[in-house]
Image 1 (cartoon, rainbow, N blue to C red):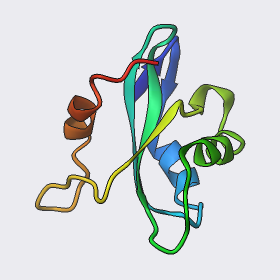
Image 2: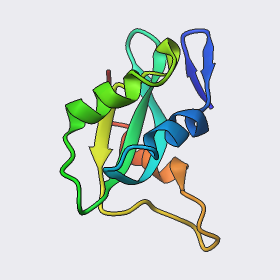
Image 3: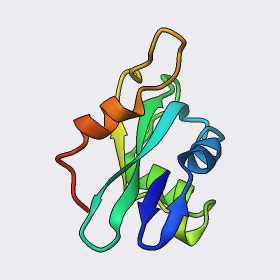
Length: 103
């Protein structure tokens, strides 16, 4: 869960929307530091190889389909997502990797 302002944001809700985009092969949403809100959602995306994908267009596409408090602030592209032996995405590793980001 991401705590943004006084709102609880559930990453799974945003991820479900983003998976509908034809250019997204896999996605994980994590919270990063925000000067204004405490935390804000950022998507870590594995792009589908057959569709060109740009950060700003994906942000706009996603934010048009989620609630106002769920809007993502950034997209980070990766070749794959870190997973444990059971296939679960290691979001703690992603948060640590993105700790330098501030929005």
